[in-house]
Amino acid sequence: MFHATAFQTWHHRTDTAERAPVFPDGCRDVLIVREKGGAEKIILTELDLRPRVAELAAGTEITGFRLRPGAVVGQGVLAELRRDCGRAEEVLGNELASGKAAGKAAGKAADEIILALVAPGASVESVAAELGVSRRTLQRQVKALGLPAPDYWRLLARVRRAAGLLTSGLPLGEIAFLCGFSDQAHMTREFRRWFGRTPAELKVLPDLLVLLCQPALGNWTGEQISTR
Image (cartoon, rainbow, N blue to C red; front, side, top):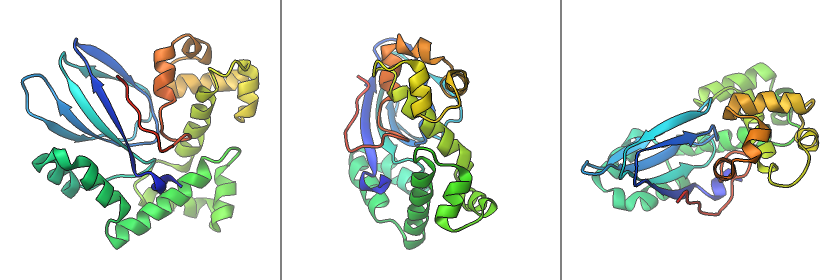
């Protein structure tokens, strides 16, 4: 279950100005950003719908807490972190593990829906049937939880699973088949949509593959990650 591990901690530091790629991963991150000569900033990222580039100034240090897929924290938590960011792991752990009753129920509902949508071979119709609701009701439930549409989770999980197999040595056509694409060309179009590059291009860019294989939607684990 996603809620077994509430968040992943990661660190990044840059000595020179950097344009850092960011790929959709189904997760929000709480960031503690320290720019050289500046005050610490606490930022809650949004869910990315397409690849983007983050501009980082020289001397920037980031401690990130990647929340489990679909999870979010409120402004009160961010305000508490601004008062004492040294307690970030404790504050986030307490918030995501317990929370208020309504928030806990919403988190459980989001986890259940996302888990069903990211299962290999899942469709919106099959997930709605599994949860005992109509397709339209499922779409309304997802919207009420403040989450992107069901297909966002299903399609992103599929393409991220495929990205995780690029280092396996399997032919691209076989990866496409295993991950449920209609053919290799279909998989290539989805890679361009979500990652801005083709599978063949990513296979020769190990630094980007490392980013795509970090714990997130489709491969959420209990391991800590570090980009540097």
